[in-house]
Length: 249
Image (cartoon, rainbow, N blue to C red):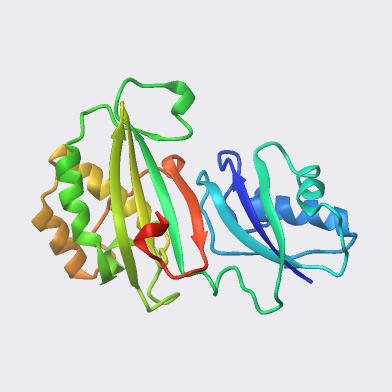
């Protein structure tokens, strides 16, 4: 039987999602928890990786087991640390794949643009200087559409020659001193959201113009953009398995 799980986690003490030899990861933590319950080794497959310090509210993974557990969600959570929580578990068809069936993802990036708050330090990016939200919104339009994002990600061309992705929408909102940048897209390459985010921050500070951003994108070169926002402000909010539509927001 194949199960689909939605998980949220605080990424602060983890070296990312993907299992590593010497560092604590979210994948390893969850696999050990499920394996203890079903009494056999389990490998989980996620919708995608998240890097060290990146958080999630709606990461999705699947796994297989022949064991039937009456309340899988409760059972798994009983074996997990407090910074990892299974939000839902459902049995799915054998052909469901958490990565290949995903149609869109939503990431949020949080910026504290007010007084420094140590309680938010691990969960947002602190920018002391006031950001021009209108400029950031205008700059974000450069990245909307089906585009070649070679200049705005750290995935090597030898690892993935296809650097074309579709961003459906970038929404920038501000409540009090907290700025939220929401990205809706069919997929994101490594550091892509963080590199775009820092570029928008620089635009909001007046450090880079919209025309300069367009030139960086058009260059399609790994050296074109050196911006990269900190990982702690990034959240994987949702993985969607139906075609993206605006009314889903």
